[in-house]
Length: 144
Image (spheres, one colour):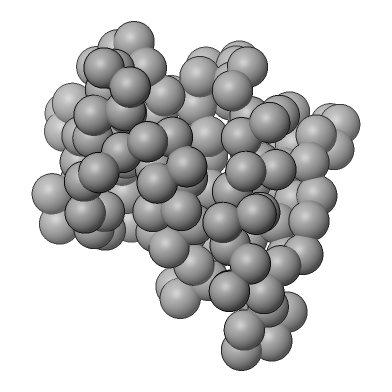
C-alpha cells in the first residue's frame, strides 16, 4: 500500500485541495471515498466536479444510489453505497455495470462491496481534524 496523496485543508480552502487532488487522481478510474457521516465526502465531490468544469448542482446520491454529471463532454458517476447491504445487492442495483462504464467514478461508502472495485482505484480517507479542518489521505490499495 503506497500513499499517493495527502493534505489537510480548511473548508474554505477546499478548492485548492480539489485542484491538488486532481493533479494526481486522474490516472485512476475510480475514486473511493471513505469517511464518517458528515466528514465531507459529498462536499469534496462537489469541489472536484466544479474544478472539472461541471455546472451541475451536486447532491448526495444516498437515495438515488448513482448520480451522473457531465464533465467536459464525458460522464462522471457519483455513487453512494451507504444503503447497500452487501456485494450481491450492489450487483443487483447496477453498481457493477456503473463501474464498467467509461469515465470517472466517485464512490462513497465503497466498503460495502470492496471486491467490485477495479485495480485502478484510488482509496481516499477523509477525516475531520476539527469543525472546519479536514485531513485527506489517498492510497493505491485499501487501508482496511
